[in-house]
Length: 269
Image 1 (cartoon, rainbow, N blue to C red):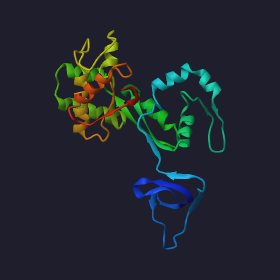
Image 2: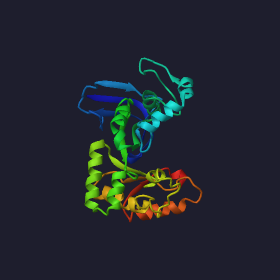
Image 3: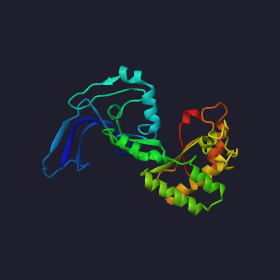
Image 4: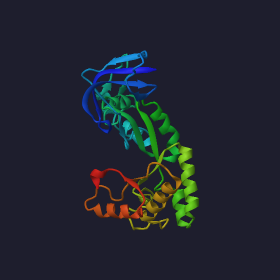
């Protein structure tokens, strides 16, 4: 199928287009040169007065899973006060602070996004998270599975099991949860809080497993790298948002031992 987008203001820095008004042709989902052989245009869209650009990608956005449903349950006023009406193109949905799946897809599309990634999928909750993301329209979706406080991982590390065995476990988890990456939130800290530990810095030992966040970060960043997972370890650092936590952030970077990591929530470092 050949599609023509007519007269839009095009932004494509890689190809030197900076607000250039031009026609854009697409064949079977890919941008192609304007046909010179008289090929029939199957569909034409009038884009005059509109912007044409590559869709934005949100690498970290909470659009599915248990924590979002808890937020929805705790914010009934958000749903009563912010409705998305049913139209020929949209179905009814609601909420702004914690919107429903349909409203989430519509609003991301309005902002120019075409892909969104849920960064905190619990292995035990992966099926529900994927079903919820599947109900979110228009945008492509993916997810990162949380392993930094996983009890089985911490048990393996406490027993001194090999990196190869841990790599196998990480690979199995990625496959079983159908995620594209691994996420760490306050490495080991969520588990430690269950044992009444109220603070866990990068080199503090877990009160039960005796494992430090540094060891978790080093082990998982190596597992992700050695397995060839495209997205590096996705890290929500220790003490994030606490004054003076820049020291923890620097320790977190060093814990990766030169391997790539993706530091989330940069505004809180």
